[in-house]
Amino acid sequence: QLQLVESGGGLVQPGGSLRLSCAASGFALDIYDIAWFRQAPGKEREGVSCISNSGRRTNYADSVKGRFTISRDNAKNTVDLQMNSLKPEDTAVYYCAARPFSVQLTCVMSEYLYWGQGTQVTVSS
Image (tube, rainbow, N blue to C red; front, side, top):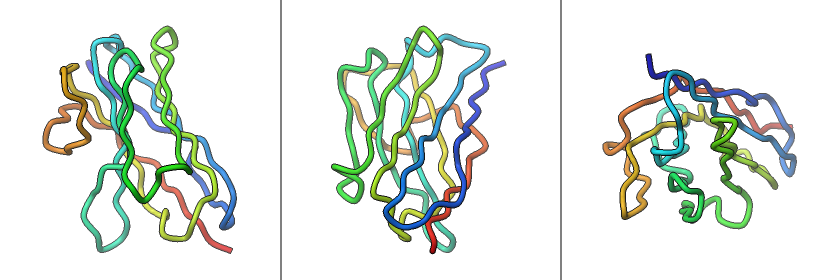
């Protein structure tokens, strides 16, 4: 059974950092592109960042460029999202998702087939 499990969420003060991790079980991640999405209360789910199966290509939403870094370790079957300089508007449930690798890397929600349950990130003083 394909499964993705997120971890690393929590409460952090503005300007702080968190590192989210997405662990896969039941399948090898190295043939899948992985994306992080987030959903804030009362808002639609949005793409944050995505990474190609090889790790050579990455995309970021404008709102997180320069602050968030996505990376992957296919040997460990994990994908991480390092989040620095966090802002209150980063508060959301963060989800990782997987799709079979594609030539064009996109962070389009409808293209991702497998989803984790999400981890809460709260940025507040």
